[in-house]
Image (cartoon, rainbow over all chains, first blue to last red; front, side):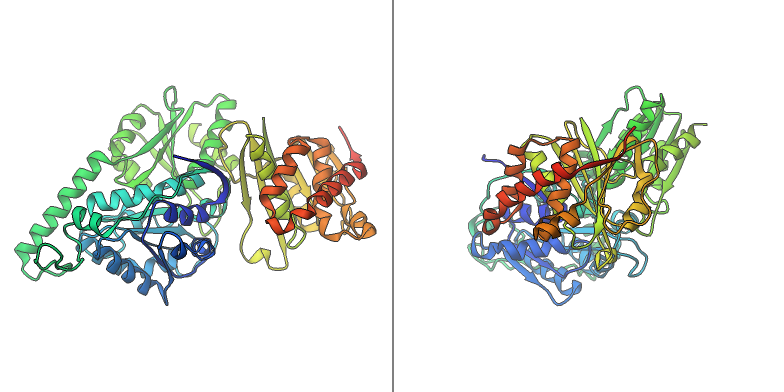
Length: 359
Length: 183
């Protein structure tokens, strides 16, 4: 397959990937710092080439419900937003998870709470990984740390969404959304045909077609025992997902005595802090969760278990640290270092915090 | 080789596009690159800055607070970033509008009087390329050939006839660079 080298913003990479992987539709509403997703799609006008629908909806509520409808028809559909807008989508995401439909949503996080700020943050970790909407559901959550991953995770996100018939979130932030980096992009892949969807998505509401049977997409089941059975089926999928699709990256962990755990842009900043620390003889490594749900619990248990101390570095007041603590089961002390409200911690700052922890 | 650069000035001075051209030229030269703008309310009529990193290795943090080079184009940016240059590093600035000149003794400091020169030659829009020329004189990270390719990539095709003028501006920048304080 022909690959092409480009210099792109993270947000543009999301849009470009959607077109090139053969997505059927994007429905969104502008909000900083992710507006380039919709802007790039509108500039590229894929509705004239691949036939992909790009629509600026009247609100985030409309966007997520358009995604719900597109997904119900077996289409590969997505939306993107930033924190306050993403909050508005939580009801829809719960319905999509309840109806067991595949969908992709991107959150380019900004500082909160409330309207907060437009600067980068990671303060939506709880919302995304613990369920921002109601009910026992999970969002499969991918945390890109580079523009290339912003690009790659769109197709991966669709694949996982269809594999588990569950919404997938790409949890990014203003740094990864706004930074331009060099990326390799793929050739255009065709969108799925109606025949393909008919064959591979027997649940999709595509009309009777050959079967003559009704296909009903709903998240409502008033009989408790039946609702429990649906929940059991959903939970079984989640156990499968935990087993097969947990992803992480371990950097310089083999000889490490201390460990950073960080994702997304915080992980990139920690990579620099690792460099600074190692230059002064502090043996520190980094585990970067790539899936935030399922969380790489086992990996952190094994790698973290060998460490003297662990520091969870996040652009929030301490959210992922709870999962890190659960992973090491109290056997290794875990500290948190974070800046929030739109402030990005510097590599030197994290290095200083590490030195204090080591002392 | 890793070069960590901050370019800072007013919105409208071409800070972001200068960084973009450098980043594209870096890509043409097979380097890893990162370009991170400051974004938000501060860009509306206020200061604008961009962190550009060129490297032969995987780039760690796109966000930095210490730089090998600071290219400074107004007083606010001088106040903010003079102290952010690593010891032994490089500071290049346009003295136009600068009332408090840099005072550090542990870094190399050069002036590039790009605003005056651009006005004198009637090429105000090429101001940023004159500044870039000053930087490339000290740190020839990208060859003129790659810079040409970088310009081709970063400028829309309808502006490609302006590439020679951009390249001339870079050469002017190289010729007017003056040492202010060297170690």
